[in-house]
Image 1 (cartoon, helix red, strand yellow):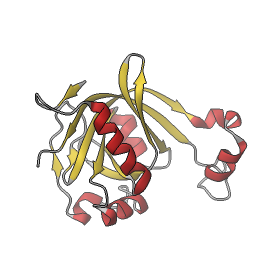
Image 2 (cartoon, rainbow, N blue to C red; image 1 turned 30 degrees about the horizontal axis):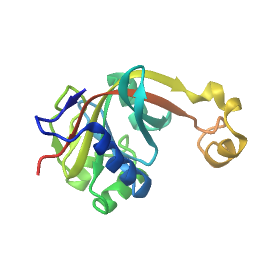
Image 3 (cartoon, rainbow, N blue to C red; image 1 turned 120 degrees about the horizontal axis):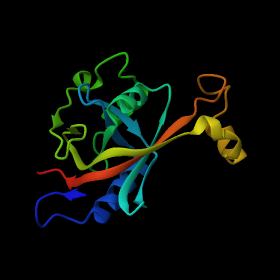
Image 4 (tube, rainbow, N blue to C red; image 1 turned 90 degrees about the horizontal axis):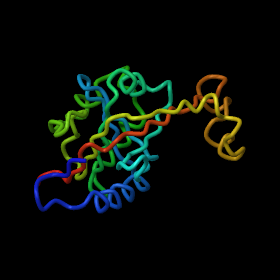
Amino acid sequence: MNNAAAGSEPYEALVREAAEQAAGNGIFLMTGKQEKNPMTIGWCQWGVIWGMPVCTVLVRQTRYSHGLLERDGVFTVCAPEKGTMKKDLAFCGSRSGRDMDKKAQLKLATVPARAGGVDALAGCALHFECEVVFKLEMGGHMDTLAPEIRRRFYDPAAQEGEDGNPHTVYFGKIVAAYRAQQ
């Protein structure tokens, strides 16, 4: 994993801060090497799997970002400073990049990727560039999911489609983790 320049914070410190933001107002998932599509996520997990730092994100198969992830195999997670970008997060969590260029609509800029991932979102404090190393389609495994979780998040009556609109779980090797330069 490529941390920022010498003297940068260890990735574990960045993860703690990003996880707090994800649990609060959410964070951005940037997909699409050409499109640079921001999507708000609240579910993200960081850890070490297969001896490498990994960031795991869940994306419903009906989302525009799903197709971009499938095509490019890379993503960047961007965490704003706590309490900032609330309107942008709300907008990107309720609109589809399939219907509009959310970045242009909100006048958001990007910062070039440092390690070949998707460009990061300017204005965010923390960035995790990731390369997909494994994915799991939840659709074939819904019967193994705890019933209360299945009812709450995958109820066909509340979600698109009769299958409850399952997620694909993407495990991304973190190839760069850094704090935005001020």
